[in-house]
Image: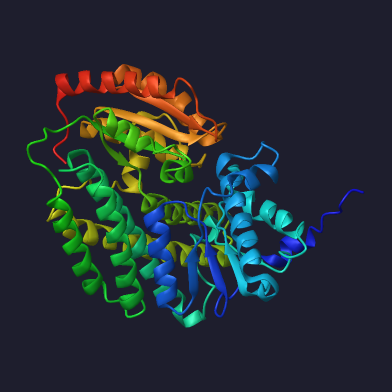
Length: 449
């Protein structure tokens, strides 16, 4: 008998729900960023936890068709594995109404925009999981947190959440800065894992108080301690920039620990940040507001013009605040150790306009990855890797646009698409890429930071 899908459930059980007095289940994408974000939510009285990842991949594959992109399979498996484990552990005490699953989305052609709808249908196919709601944020409003918590706390929660994302990026960049030069193998990984838990406690304690100075005091200590792990006798290595789809490039299991593999063959890596995407969504909403203002002004639609002016002021203020805080936190960390800076979204759009190769009007992560590759090369990086799910449209566009350009620039480039399979030629391709990066390093040197 064919099961009838209740699409009304997608409308009623996917959206912005108040998560107070619930257990908010956060999937792990970037390990550090996910844990710090959960700590911020806990500081504001939300019982948030990061669910284990990659243990439920078999379940994820069982309940997807294979046409979905890899992150959908992983996150579907993660939530099903967690819920099945909870049900077995709690038995008759298991209450699905206690849980809210957190799955943001994006507008546009990327399949990410449909994850939470599809996962709603999957959860509804289990009689025990029908009552679990899916809380979502959208790029349509720049990932506003309105609706998840009391209205008077929304602005503060968003501010401190953004701080946690930037601090998470810095801990990642600290790891990539020290691990290739660590005194003993394994020291850096162990140190960063312990540091992540220290920063969790700091955000949980000082987040709602908005005490950034106390949070940064803890980060200062961590950066200085991390600096001591570096063995100054180890010479500098070729610097490799990484771009691509945000989930797979950030999720170490999904990308089969590609940064560690690159490091094993002599690289020092810098991955695109999580805050880059958050800044981009705000920047893109500002662009949309400007376009709407111009179109409606030409047609003298004054009511709509007023609304777009309000939107422009709102998103301009948000972007200014985000970039100001990002600069402030990076400046303090970089005064202690030469971790890599992040780039500004406006600078990336300027690169596309200069080169006339793509447009922010098209959207998708390609409008970040393409100029980021050029930005890395202009900074003197010795190679670039594009990491993405197999069949990912934005990253395939990136590859198609950038390959002839990067060939002219004579800088090594590698496409690294991933699904759950282990490609037999992947390591050979990375070794070849790193040989080319070493040749570039010998000819050109590398950036100082």
